[in-house]
Length: 332
Image (cartoon, rainbow, N blue to C red; front, side):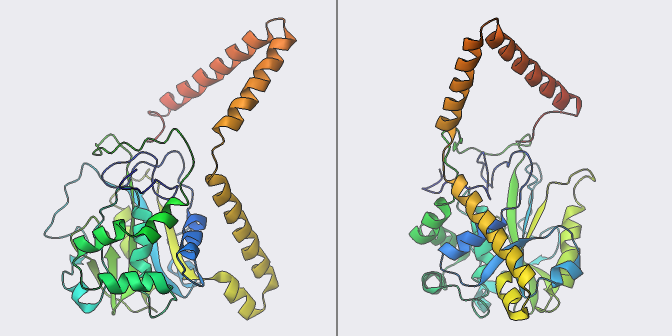
């Protein structure tokens, strides 16, 4: 863990000095983020996964408070402190009231990204008493001290940790990422004060992408996201995009759309189930199941146990050979 912060599914599996590698597919963490907001005291806000970089589709989710983008972090690429690759640093933005915090927590960049949007939308969203107090307390701090204050917030840390997966096998060793690591990172985009901002705690300041009103957000942010994705090889598809939107159940009730309301309630139920499972350690249960199966094979006799073991080894070798043939193993 990093200063008492556990790794949650939205962030990482193996830690580095950014966020760490996510293994296998990148499953959307919208259920984790939505209930994380609920537990922080935020009202009537949820996350929705965006399956396409399409301005019209994003506009349909309006009001959209911002988006969170998950991407493969270029560990071998040198970052310039003078100018970003796209847009321009706005070092004076914080003086105009924008909330921006440096990332000092290595395995909580997802939580920090959602707070980067949320704490800049206090005039549109009920962020709750405790987050409002935190924002007011850190209002005059520079970015590095805001990051330290965030890392020391018991409220935010405890809620974040409540979504940690229970497993004795999570490697929490802190180390620097190398070019061989698949490292993933969350950043936020939102319209603040008439500008489109990219908020990334690993950067020295907010990055401005030019004029942008709330109504123009969908049309302005999609080209920025496309330019970022175009930096990667054409076969790189490991991205994830989430929109922070008004609770879709409220929209369904206001429109009298019972079918949509039912779908949204079912989705919430599925998220709750997944979040509950995430908190449990099933290693003991799986071990007991395997022991029961093994005892059954031994009782069968006639070499059934040995044949079962040999078949399992054969399948494992076949999968390993298939992965090697596809170009080099599992990510992370």
